[in-house]
Length: 139
Image 1 (tube, rainbow, N blue to C red):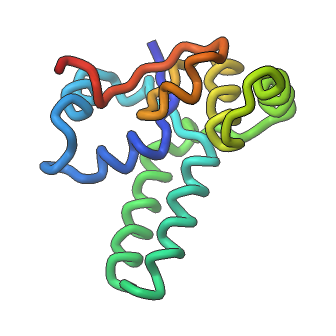
Image 2: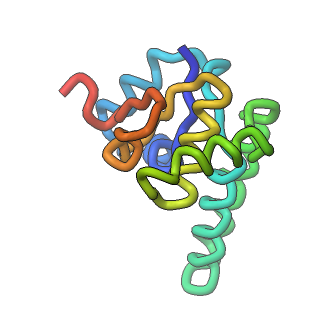
């Protein structure tokens, strides 16, 4: 099984020793080659770094380095938003509107046959995709 990681999962994993135990156990049981990111996740993290930069430049620099390493680590497993994804998102959002980024992540997972790993499973429950909440596993 392969997974598309939402920003909330990636951010939790970044915490290292402070990472939620359930998320850490779930992640450690997976093969790295089965994990994917969306360009949207990279964009959300980038936006977060820019929001931090003015009040805490040192933290922003550390986060920028982490994002650079993350991007290199995932390299060819960072998925773009393509025309098929945009069309799937449009179909998904018609009956049950959800936030744009969450909907595009769900559509990306659907088009690529991935399980969406997110803490926001309630937002995607009504959609025709498989999802998992690593925060609630093995509790």
